[in-house]
Amino acid sequence: MTRWVLLIAIAAASVANAAPAGRRIVAVLDIRVEGMPDSVGKQFERELEEQLDTNAFWLSTGAQVRERMKFSTKWNDGCLIGPCLTELRTQTSAELALLAALKAEGTSYGYVVTIVRTDNGRVLSQESGRCDVCTAKEAMREATLATIKLLNEVPDKLPDEVGERGAQIDLAVGKLVRHMKSDQRRWKRRGIGMLVTGLGVAAAGLTAYLVTDSDPTLAAVGAGGGLALGGIVALTF
Image (tube, rainbow, N blue to C red; front, side):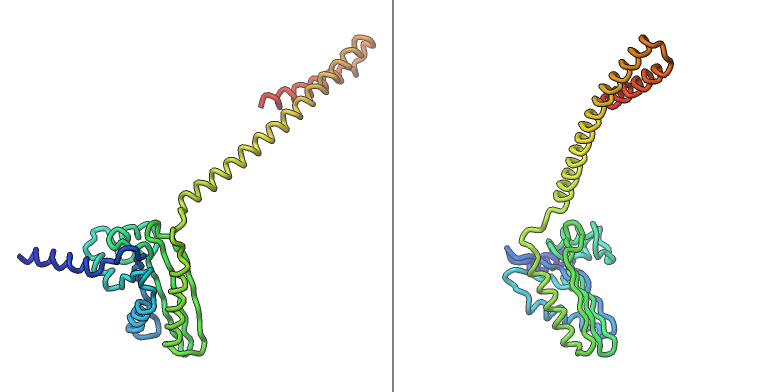
């Protein structure tokens, strides 16, 4: 009986947390607060949830994410970026994950918000800011607006990074092949020139040797032969 009650509760929670069709799910993966009460993180999350365009996005809060992920046998809480985020996508259907860091030092406040893709675990975008003389409320407002800005800038269809890298590799290989062919043609032209020149020099030297029986002409024959051999090698390769 207890088991059935637990399963029904899990199913009910899943239905309650399910995003309406057509909305992009954003999972709040980590909010770190330094120099301020922990409640600031929850307040930031609430403000983001209230101001985010609910027609385009569905925010899966940190509590909801933790509830979903505790039933996974593959998940570790230390996963923030990288391929391990595919498990987050599997369990929550979130296309994007949000990381936020809020820090206070006296009257200075800073924030860093990061949007990560859950399909490949790569950072999609990031924004940071700092206010040297302001209040926690003002800093939180800036962090919230920065997060909304990043989410609104996410393209409707995320770029296919694997496909793009493959295309870049194909392009680079194509350029290399064309370059090699160009070099090959250039070397063939040089080889033909060397072969013709070498044969000409060798023929002239041999003729002079036969007429004059002079040793220097043998050097000309040898030099011509060397050029011809170089031309043959260039043509061969």
